[in-house]
View 1: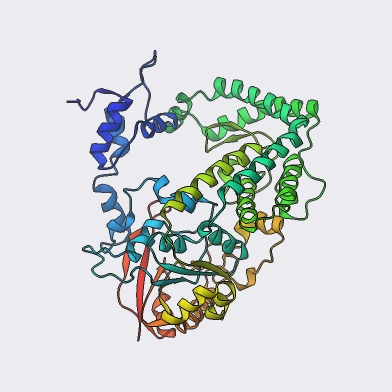
View 2 (view 1 turned 90 degrees about the vertical axis):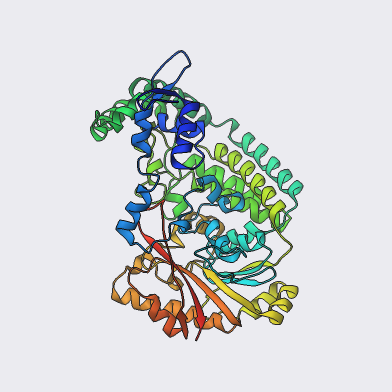
Length: 523
């Protein structure tokens, strides 16, 4: 038996934490807590130990208090079972769900919970069955389509963004894996040769050496992060001082290797947010992709390139989600607690994402069912779903006319929260896709005031009224909404529907708020 004030090995700590919070905590999870300064490390000579009291302090928000805190802030009607807090991040981004980054997507377990045929004390009836057709008129990154495919259901997605449509269809597509691997190997070899003689390669190697020496001296792991967590260091002041210290080393290397930090022009997203060296590599790879003959292969390799260049923008690690200003120098990184650098080549991320993408597609290929999945680019307020499906897949079109759509599961945009085109501006720029920002419902740039709310209510109402024409008589509609402005009762009324139930859940990985899942039936 372990005493409460004792020292634990990493293995003992993982066992204790697993029992304490009721979910699996691996030794790697404990190591992460040490590396990021959450708990203090003791011991040497290869034997790392930690104090149990540090673990207790860290995990004290679990085992009931976490749930109580959320209910105190968000209401007692919060359905904690729908928090899915037992799942690790890797499980909520399983297989193709992490094929490409996307803001505002819901986790697959939530979709599966309402689509599958189980019941429990919260979900007392089933709404869909194998062979049904599910519609997501705000398809986004295609989560509903993917989960429908896993569950043996057919699905239609619709999205105003052509890039979102590309992502959704790539996630559910079928592939010749040998062809994908062959094309990727050829492109990777050519990219290797393209940059082999570049002075940027030698420059980056030397820069990394200097950064490692500097970081080991001034930001030792895990001591520095632990001291930060204990408030012993003024991070802003200390980081700024060391940032200036290293800048002289960086500038000397830039001059020595004649590194061009910016492009000659600044007119487009690709011009502004990528260094000259990275831009040349992006253009080189894209030119190679254009020559791929297999259309399915070309599309998925294009998505890999998009994912790659998103990770190579000239920004700090802390600003990846919300770009501020292009960065061309080394900087103190608040996320990693050390000096970091901008990227000077896409090769590392290209190699990482090509392997990761193939692995995810192959894994999903074993789970998928022989069902129809298709995402359409269009405006859900007026699109003719039957006509557009028939154009692209005659067999799916016949099934659709025969049994109609059984229901909707979707997450409409939240009013004034995200610009869905702008989050993928790099891809629109690279691929030359037409942007339709003006057709987004509830975009960030319109804000959240009364006129924006009125426009949002009208937009969602129009979508539901149009989609109703293609639904079976006894349909269910589930909409995921953070309805803090209480707009959905009006939306339901406008669409001739009624809200018959609400499932309120906490969103654990963002600022605390709740979402409601609202099945609506025809009047």
